[in-house]
Length: 621
Image (cartoon, rainbow, N blue to C red; front, side, top):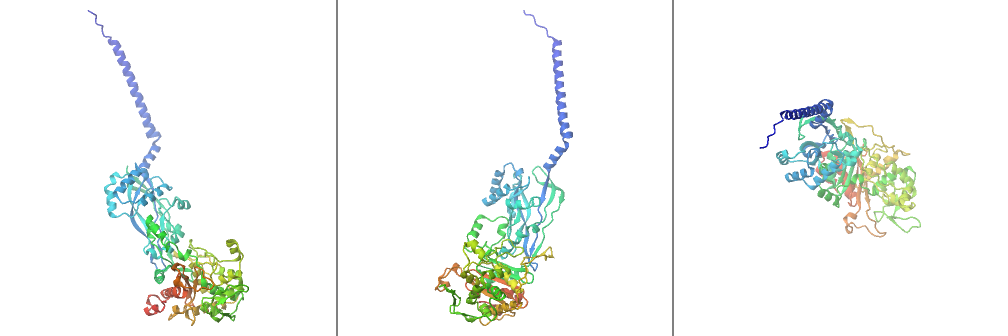
């Protein structure tokens, strides 16, 4: 029988004691490490982690200022701010942005255009935790759908905002312009701090030119949020400064009168108050609804506007460059008198054509049989081309250029319009640079009747007519009337047009009065039964050339190749209150298509709605 070994109790106690000591040391070491970490987090790094904690629960948000309002001269609201609700996303609060967008598309009708626009805005510079709009103008039903599913849509919010609204729609689109989503290029042009949170920016017209005034200054607020990023309370707030309110010289009633007078035809009308330079009306037809562009126009609608043969997006009043035709004759008549090329007794025989020496070409008058013996007065009243052919040839291009430039042709002279074209006022230097050819005598003849290389916009024609109405006094055309109810007056104008003899003004204006009220005036039907005296000049601008011996037949020509109809004028003659330029594209003669439009404009401004219906009918063609 083997002997059993006795237990070594002393050895067991020693092992247990050693293990207990090591365990105690381990506990102490871990406790010290925990205490050290606790000390580091709670004491050494207290401010750091307190800041990080505050950053998680507190957010600095920008507050977009309210955009300034735009009114007409009579206080009619032209551009308003309309409350609406938008669906927004904060990228930093979504676990999977693409999955969130896909889920939202299952809940709401979100188009691919909406998603594409959203991605573009996400790619622009923005602050962390700044929301980006995915869909605007939510309906009550759509808001309810989001509310029901909100618990599973992290980073998704329904935010209230003010968006631009144009209550008159297409009536003022070409003059007011519109606002749209701010682009990356535009963000680089502005103070990024002041535009933090701003989604809209002026794109055209008044909205673009006065963007800095209409926008205002951004505000900020510090808010406390929960784990989902929802605002619990506002801790601090610096209110934004609203944009300035602007009042324009525009008269909505006159604007509507111009649109009605054009009666759906392609054309433009510009009306100016000569004494102030205030633009009373600026019409381009057809037009478009600027509200379509505010929150983003869909591609199908935009393509339809772009592809329309009537190009409604094109501003004919400011950017349309047309041969001015016979509307330049009063200005050239003043030049002829002032340069002593002609005088009031100068008479020529008009057989219906004009011919240069050693040139087989005959420059035709619009009246095939001619006007017989005519002087300057009769040539303006009856729009005799031959008289102006002869005068232009003798006066020369240098004199014509010098005098026409003084009236604003060939340059943009409007104070607060950015999109206007300069037109073309040809000269020897211009032709040499543009065509690499010298100036020929025939070029002067064409320029003498507003054809050839010369191009002008309806705005330039109205501006020159206002200067003529003022007897040479320049008042720079402008849209703005008041800023925050304070009159805007510090606007510098070009030098006045001075003539050697002051009576030249009255002589030419009297001839223009004959256009409207004379026995042989080209627009006498439009001046008939008027309770006031008006001065005007009709014009017809060729669109295509006609062969030497061919007869112009409008019916045989495609509608868009027919002549443009033009008219310039002002009223009343002795104390001008309104100067007008009218263009009717492919409208034919200025006397039949453009002058009646101007008469309705004069009546609307000078007589008003009290005008008897019979008298208005008398003004019709």
